[in-house]
Image (cartoon, rainbow, N blue to C red; front, side, top):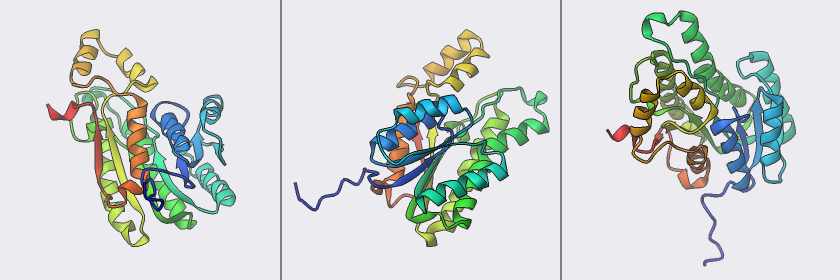
Length: 256
């Protein structure tokens, strides 16, 4: 092999912030980033579960911060704490998500506000704070975990689908705005993966409906690792010519 060859998929030496790292996809993204060579900063609200994630990271200069990303003052302080330690970072995975299944006639304005606050606004606020505090290095990459439901509809999930669609359209605009800064912004659109949030969602549904959802995934339900691998790709130099895009990782759900 040419001695000058560099693995374009590595995150060696990069500093990556992962939100929602207490469980599910966010947790796996954090672990995978660390095993891909990154120093990882993990955000989460649950101290015990965040500690469990922290202990699973490969050895490195990692940090864990207990914070509610919807608390703007706490979020500002958390970002300042990260930048005080690292100076600047190279990327982010926004994997905080809230699911809310409810027939349209029963959805209240508060439901929309809650979903958008968690699924959309907090992620963009993190980006704004990082930019304001000059905390993103040149060639940084920002990855938002959205959902295939931003493209494929599902009854009972109007507010959720709307919030995920907002992420996708917002990311496209943000990607254009950050091109002069050499910062890339993309989304990953997962299908249904085996997480605790999925378990809670399935618990609300009749057994036959659950079977139908599983059948809609030709390759079966996904694992958090499937989404983490996609996120690492978008964080790495291997995706340096990709911005404003949505990477579908859905086990074939959307090809029906």
